[in-house]
Amino acid sequence: MDYAIETTDLTKCFGSLTTVNKVNLNVEKSTIHGFLGPNGAGKTTTIKMVVGLLRPTSGSVKVLGQEVHVDDADSRLNIGYMSELPKSLNISKARNFLIFTLHVRDVEARKGRSNSQANRFGWFKRKRK
Image (tube, rainbow, N blue to C red):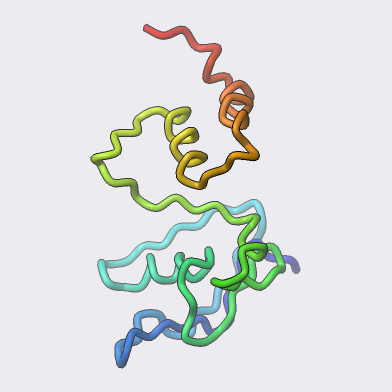
């Protein structure tokens, strides 16, 4: 079976501290999953390895059948990740967040994309109150 996400013995150590220990996941396509656990359980560390932001100490990650590597941007093209935003940014509208994200990523080639995406989702069709 082709999985959306596959991890094999995914492990992350920071010095002598093992924060993620041989995690094996098989997440089917078109499903929704969540990570629940106490602070320090390794949820964020695991997600960061899955999206290619943190190099595993050992093990492997595949997203849509392709190995994910920290130093290979092409392996992360089909991955979207949104961490918690600092409250100081005060981005409360989806359109503003989309524009902010494109700006941060310096997506010059997609300059008009925020407007086309906003139109796609009907954000400009709503009347302001």
